[in-house]
Amino acid sequence: MFDQILNVVKEQMANHPQAASAIPADKADEVHKEVASHIEQGLQSQASSQGGIGGLLSGLTGSLGSGNPVTGAIEGGLVSSLASKFGLPPAVTGAIAGALPGILQKFATKATDPNDKSINLDSITKSLGGGGLAGGLGNILGKF
Image 1 (tube, rainbow, N blue to C red):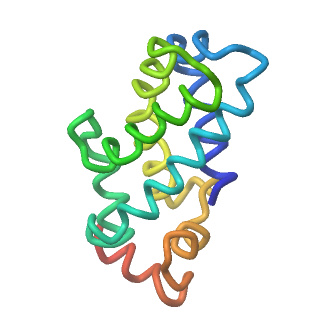
Image 2 (image 1 turned 120 degrees about the vertical axis):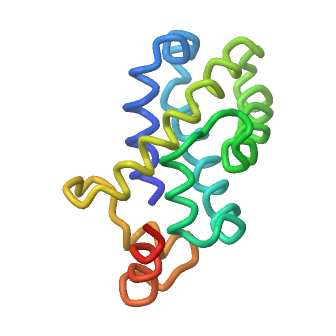
């Protein structure tokens, strides 16, 4: 699932000029990986409190402002990590955090689109603690 998230991060950051221009070119790849890592960890930790994977993905396709619990759970640790690991100033970490709702929404949209094969629901289910297609896809689809 990490690679799928990383691809969405890179795509969305390129489409978010304020965040993309704020990241030093020599640190872009590492920053993208850090963002993807925090998103993956945040999704894993939030899946159970959001009603399982289906509830989590459903919540991500809806409103994702700063008050959203998933966004909030990821944002705080991400901003701190980007500042400490890469020495990024608050203006840069804030721009990246501002792109987070769009990244999460794009990931969820791709995951729930049966015509988009770039995100594999089976890998999401396994990565977030489900049992793969046999154990989790019915639960995912049943929540929609």
